Length: 356
Image (cartoon, rainbow, N blue to C red):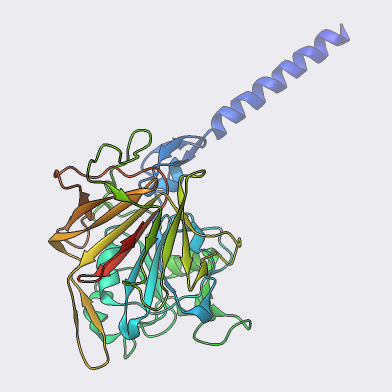
């Protein structure tokens, strides 16, 4: 008799636990407009990899990171799902890391100043732009109401506000300007204080970006494909002499900088990418200081796409700040990227990529 009573109690407890578990299976989405399952997975717009549905509705950060030799390694750069590299004045390039899973990062940076052409590249992802000042050419755009930015100092160098500057910090392991950082908690607190949405904004956010292949795209279907085991960008980025080497065992390109592996300071791991895009872009020199301008909104640009040890010639188009950049093969078909991270080198038109 006691055994039956105990079994009934255990069954009732199990039922209660089951009901609690069922109730906990659903969590409010970030927008609060509906509910998603806690274990529901969706495809990342950045990599095509499965990610939690709740993560997909959060805004990424677009963080400015240096390529200076003394500033290596950068912290958190390995979390970049899309990494841009563009030349700036002084024949030195700069990077912009699009990071969607930034919330738990303990150290992000170091963080450097922005340029106006990065804003045009960034906006298509509707990010929170994280930078440490900038130059006066970006004054009008960075202060526009649609831009949500965090800056460690005056946002365009010679003036402007410094939104979120109290949440940046410096470390003692490097000398300024190579020691300015922020972390995920600081970004969250800064955005809450400034009233920035941490969820993607429907009026700006475009969920359609890259077109990903079903399965693996080896580029074997292109009779004009070129070799792409080594991608040498030393003619484009003359200071860093960035280059990529393809590993057929992993199907990934390892990024090198200053003659050695480019790594993440948080993990020590070398940066790797499934896709490498070289985007030839019209440019001009603005003034005697050497500040550059890039025409990132265009309909006639060309370049190259490399993946799985091969490459093809491509064209690209971008119609507005918030519209995604589209990449096409020479037959006019949108290229199909492989699942994984993507590097985009925005090259000055007239500078050649070398490959073998």
